[in-house]
Length: 260
Figure 1: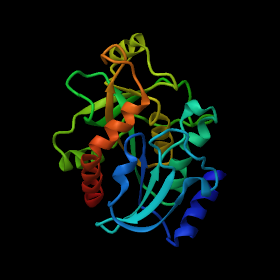
Figure 2: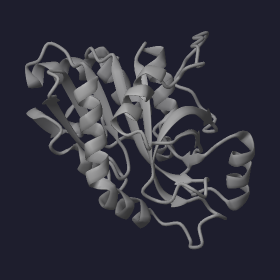
Figure 3: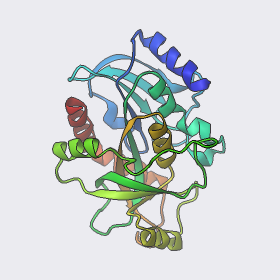
Figure 4: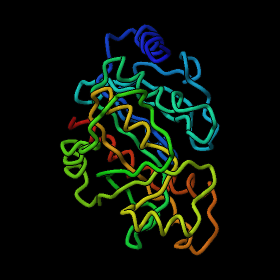
């Protein structure tokens, strides 16, 4: 299986016995990966088996392995494959499954998203408490029944709130993409109980829970959803919001890694 080969290649390349934690840095988050710990090594993600070069602006396509201030080994995946790229589900969850096979018990999944709550302007970081998967897909095959009652770890959410008590919690709704949601779809997401909309994270969370990992989900609101935003949506907003929020994102991730 590709993720087993990738995990072995990762451990061999960086001469480490295992990793403790993985972070998947989505749109707007890659810049926050610098300075989170002592660098053990780095490489292009595409150099490892089964990984593809990211196609989305704002996804660096790098793997950096660091040692945190708490002495843990963390793998920072700057970029991800999205379901809308048409490669299937397996490449979408390949990073999470590679991290689990390399020993990681914890994964932090980050993304840039559209906000549905008026009080959460662009630049707001939201801790995920749950998700709604509207992608029409799953990484699970056959009679693989995984409990998703606490998909996002209460323990990890508590640590995140300890780092920054001002962080709100919300429900993330994953759409297929790549088109942005229509105003009607945004209204539907709100009726269903969603607070955020995007095109990632839920499938990776399912794969992580299948692997027995604890999951922390963090969303950066980069724009209001269609019908709420006064202007047309554009990916440039996502990149700009990430750059503007970079110091806060780095402080949040650093504080979390110091406590985990």
